[in-house]
Image (cartoon, rainbow over all chains, first blue to last red):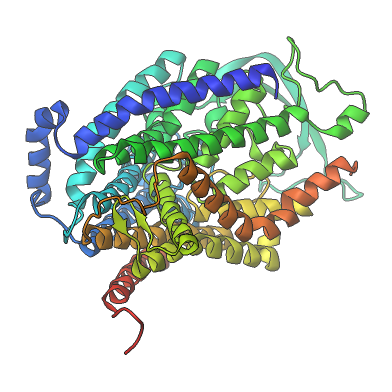
Length: 601
Length: 35
């Protein structure tokens, strides 16, 4: 890492933590109803409950909470599916795009409802404005709010004692959307527009290019078939291009919630590498901060809601340390570049005139540091937005984001899902510690018993099952291997990355794999759905079980869970579980590719 | 094909609800395993 890389990483972490503390305080006030904004917005809130027929005072058991989450998400998925299939007859489609194919619509609907935002299509060449706004942007809000609601329910499980209920899903969903996501999105969208992110409903613009480009293309007949000469070779013709079509659209509004809600689905195919989505280094820095702001703030909120701020800061410290280490690994790998190029006397050193290192697939305006931090942030969180192409990362540069996704995206993580994932690991850590010292494990004053550990096991083992079985099917089926652009270990990495990304609800991709086929659309949709809700159900079950228990006072024999020892224990558990689960698969992909690279292949 | 995928979404939801019911049953089970 260069001094510049270290400086940029340090600045980012300092700004993130400095903003997360006040946002965490505000979120706590919103969720307990003491915020001024909640009091002001009460009439609107009550009107919404009245329209929806919701009894805001009625509390829910964990099972009712889970049923509400599931039904709400299923209805959302059906609505997005309908919009995608009917977009040709809907308004605000100035380019006249056709409906998506059924399998692609199915994949996209599941993808956006599960906060994954895996995209097997190019936004600007597939979707009209109404679908982008009413279908995808709405789900960006709803899926993010659902994730936060689930973690709030889990925190209530820790905070309450001898209670049968964990809150009301509809009230949580409304308050999170109305007082947290919507106001922050408006501020962030305005900041993005100030940096040049577009926001309009204009048709795409044809502009004259500065120079005429001529290239050769195969000649086609009236039916669109290639014309061939007597020898059977395609007849080529000169094509002159003097116009370029520039895509327009309501980008800033979608971009704000895309980052805030760790959704990651880009308006454009190039995502945050597109100059209309992420025009400047400052816009990029804002995107980075906004991406991890709510996940970091949730840690602060956790400490405040359970009545011991130190518990929240311990989790935040563990996340921050792991994040800094991941940034070091990622940026070091990319800054080192490719040794084969060095042997060819290609200058890969950083200087005043160039970033140095591996700049393939990266934007010059962001360089190595801003691309590396973005890659780590987007995979540490369940965001999946990209400002550089992950398929072009060095093998070890690709190893880091893949491992971060496979660890369950708990290092800051997705909004809500990151913290509930980390708390599940915290329960596992205290259980392991309890086994070592021979005491019944406790966490935040709650005894952790066999039921909680069974639920922890389901939550931790389900995603590796989906990833490893899905990858196996992908590499063993001809339908799976047909999509590989780079055969060999990199092709294996592309499939492993795809299933890791889907099952952990990330959404980023190693771009070399062609996934817009019924085979991948269906398999990845299964991974996305069960990766999301197969984890949420046991987490809510833990919340219900914990809420029902008494809170125990800390004694001399209680393992402290707010100090450095616990931070190390938590990180150790995380790395151990991740390593034991995924090392064999990673060894076949990025590790082999790295060894091939350094041996000159 | 649309019907197949719509049924798929409903089935996904149903399976997760079944998981919730299974978790609840597990919770109700007496400590120490089966009698």
